[in-house]
Image 1 (tube, protein in one colour):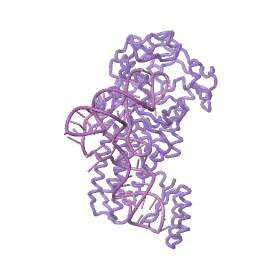
Image 2: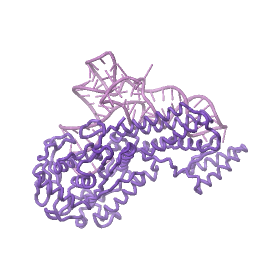
Image 3: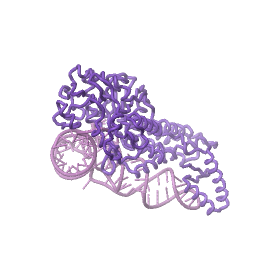
Image 4: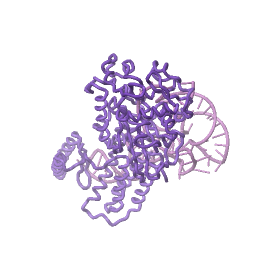
Length: 495
RNA sequence: GCCAAGGUGGCAGAGUCCGGCCGAACGCAGCGGCCUGCAGAGCCGCCCAUCGCCGGUUCAAAUCCGGCCCUUGGCUCCA
């Protein structure tokens, strides 16, 4: 079975065929670095990461590019707030640092490059010039706008006609534009205080001195700044060529951002800009989406430090990338239980494999069939438009197969268990889940102390002093140490 | 208003593209049993779904077609 993906461009689920049979170019519309990344960003990040991992698993060489938008009014608006520094560049620098830290915390594969707008202005200017030369853009008062009426397919991605699209942009822009739907490729001068007032978090009046920190560049049309949409076209072409295999982004970017990217890119090159457009659905929370602008978000770093990487990733992949997902703490707690179940099954099976007791001679047909079935199920799930929920289900089925086998016999099928454990590691890794167990370390001082306390408790149990034994266990549980008694003695997991 | 996505058990969430294996997965919650000094974990089993509503096509529909109701997202910065 081959990979199928749902292409927003056609609305269909199509077989995936990259331009080059061995390589895939993947561009992800990254963050505007004006706020700390929140779980909504993490959701898209993780799904793109899973796509990357699965494409690699299928044997493709993946070229993965993700931009940082570091030139934007929203960033200027934050100048002077908190400890963000005194310039647009310093605010951007702070939040790029935060974003990278969060990516590491989420166990994301590194992209090949994270281009910034500020370092691609020459490419952007070239692209705008090309568009002007080809008659797709016009200059007006030092700004340059894309002429949507000149591009026949405008609206194809979002399935709208130009007439449907009501006026957009700042009121003072409209007088400069020939058609209300025309969009800015280049904006004259710096940032207008009125334009950033709405983006201030402290609700303070427009900070005129902040606006002066906005970066501007010299261009054929005078001093100015790039428009929002042109950056992605310029950066993706600079790093991945004129035609992308996959372009991913949030659903909220379909219009106008992605629509405009297509128009300006294809107008400039006469080549298809992206073969497959994949869109990540958003979180729903109290009947509205989670977003920076609504201020109703949970930051990535808060979530990871509270629940841990594996739990957060289990939660974020609990739905398909292109289905919206309800955000709630209860939902994350439920994901935590699912992750615990996987981890316990993995650890128990590993312990059985590493036990010095003899356990090797039987072949458990049921176990091996279950392992094979789970592997097949995982692979079909991922090939079916990256269905991470079904993939999790396959992992959970695998966990039960392993538990079941250990429950049924002490005469373990070593080879069968090993295959199962191996599959959990390999396919868990596709979802970015790691059984390395940084929290289960028995080599730490804490681990040794717990072992010591449990050895005392065992003596109390053997002596029938269950009250003392329970007291010790309760005390450890209260500290977050999960103590489990079993036939082979107690096991524990550190918090 | 226009465009798009969706409405499946107590919760959450697959399945809908390619109609029959769906008398509806997996997990959580709940209930029984096994195991256990107890608890937990685990295993086995059970409970909860007329798959938004109405009509149509078909031997057969959660899945296809038509109409209606409702929700969400986009149309303004947004993953």
